[in-house]
Length: 164
Image (cartoon, rainbow, N blue to C red):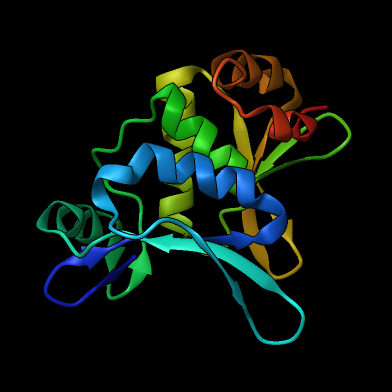
């Protein structure tokens, strides 16, 4: 997200995830004037992206989720199944039996807040896991089936590989 007078949201993935950008576009089409387009980046990367209009409604979200241009987790956040599945499709990955949410760009307080939300709202146990220099959320093996039962009905077929 970016914000001057009002905020906008840019959805930007590699061209291999065109299907995912198109799905997000369908969800947000009422906020967008121009459909997704391919764009050559630096080097060989080809991005596929779209940007919403700058809107006061998005500014409300920007102020809630950003502090001094850094991502934060609002204290009143609710994680419904759709928000969980989009979070996992964007930032999730699997290991042998556990799942990870790549939250390295959040401060430690926000990461703890997310872990508490997972536990309190969905009974999903998680811990922080060191990934090189940063922390990320590791969903405990014992909670993988719970997490999967919540998000699997909503996950795009192309992302089903993200489960053990």
